[in-house]
Length: 549
Image (tube, rainbow, N blue to C red; front, side):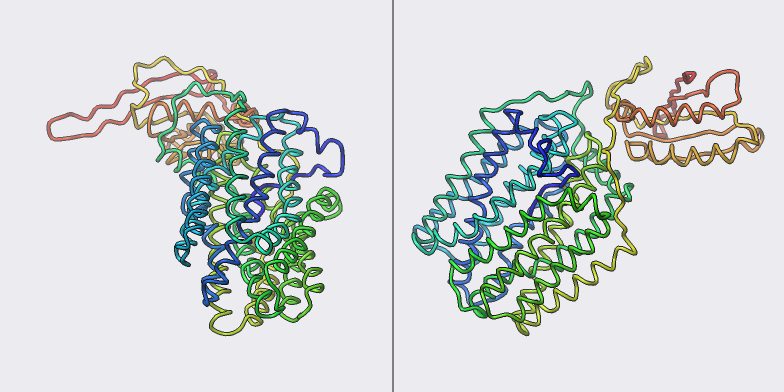
């Protein structure tokens, strides 16, 4: 699938190609296209190899699942790695895994040891390298190009991959038919070396944080919590998971359609994949125009209808030409849907967590794709190929209707970057000391209470998504004008990190809350550290009081 987010820039406009003026982006982007070409060739080769060495329809359908499961299993870990470690090194490590696994697969085929489960295993291992590389690469786009060029850059990622999709499968079919499977696997291994060398040679500056690296457990928790608190990301994940589950039948069962229904071979399979890629490129190139004409929800609905028509037509046709045409329609719907969903996640994620939100998003949609591959493969094996494709078409129409429950929000601007400016209070604490309890006392007259509660609801959301835990608001029963905001962070460093993640908009919210405060002095901020009690140790609680400014 196209593992990139689209953008609102019109791919046909000169501004779309502005990121290519950046030497580092251009080099890695071009190298990635070479690698994608090899991956598509390898996909054709693995699918056809499985169709020839196994009589099980389910094993053939599990090939896409083997390439998507790693992203599902490893997502939260690789996302945290991408946000906490040098992204260039993470990309290099992922590419190394892909090269090694592909070389081993080539050796196995050369020695004649290929078995169905072994092929799936190597496909899984190659996908593990991709799962490590992809979030780091996408998160690095904002580090490599100027902020104004980020939308155009992510559009180029989408258009680039789908342009390669037009020739990759056909080229894979030609190579397999003319030179054999071994040549296809060997060439793929060589293409994987291109981005590996490019990443080794390219370097780019990344704004470093003054704070120490997050512990993996905390990083994972923060990523999951931020995702859970974002209605935009949750809607994109829900729609993407359902869309992946329903739509993957077209690609997962296409080798069986070619072999059993159309009576074709590797060349026919590659030709049909090229038709799918041609439609995908059309959808990517016209993405900006579509977005100006229709809302994201309308585009998602049309994408589901297009993919449903493709799946239903494949179930009924026996003509390769007709199949190629309907696959072009399906390809256009496929890339339009994924571009829209991806851009929703990208724009809703600030830079400090974007690697994790992207990974979580891909984990769940890849889980849907893997489940769909198994579901439709089982349906084809136990009943019929036609019934499986018809079921997929019906499921896609249901996914279109889920917009009532999970509507996609229109967003034209990305989340602002954190200010990363915070004058930490002078306290005698080690970085890992904690838990830290934060209390802020406000004096709010009765006529301001309603507005105060509304703003504090926003403040709770803001602080909780950047690291605050157990946020509460209490009113003093003996002094009703006094309100106390309380939250916790696991350590002193986590408290500092929370404040470094706040944006200009978050600071403006603080100013609006301050206007409702009636005291002569600013609200009083108290920082406390929790201490456990025991039979041999008295309860201890250290406190620091600071006026808020």
